[in-house]
Image 1 (spheres, rainbow, N blue to C red):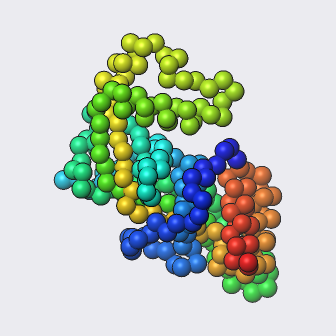
Image 2: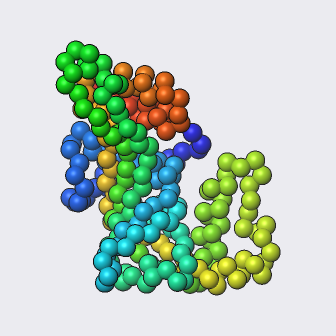
Image 3: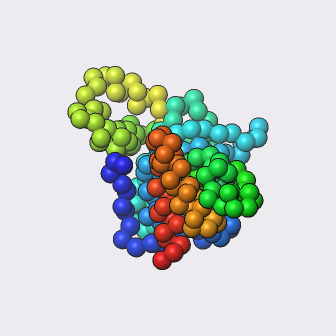
Length: 234
């Protein structure tokens, strides 16, 4: 994988209160470095907001920033025509970051041949962030946000593009048409459903089956099953 986010020296429990996601204890993830790493690797957030007309969802890439005390903020930008940025500052939004996921066939379980008592499931890793929002139309602040996002996502390019590569008048027109947003994280909740509830022999057969499929998505899930299965056996 590309460079990972390692912002915190020690695990920190972001989950200060119950959140509305069904999550059995064996799938619950509270380690801040693990949660923030998923956000860094999968920065496209699904932002769910309660509006006067009902639930609204937006899909916006965000960049985590550690601002003094935990838990920090997530920054991005939206078009001025997007009403998201006009939400009241006390309004709470749900931000969903979807990590690796994969279908798990019963055929992957070693115990299928023994008892047949197996069923299909879906493995996945996800982070929910509950946050309030502030917005800025200050061109300098928006430029800092654009620069931060660009530098982060261009870092793996052989010749990284920079905001300053674009003509200044073009950039200025862009700054006038967007709004900077900053989500202030209230709590983070993680759910890693990666076969922790299966016996070790099934975990091993799932890992082997996923790796044998040859796809990048299943390879990532095999890595998670191996990692979190090993964590349980420590």
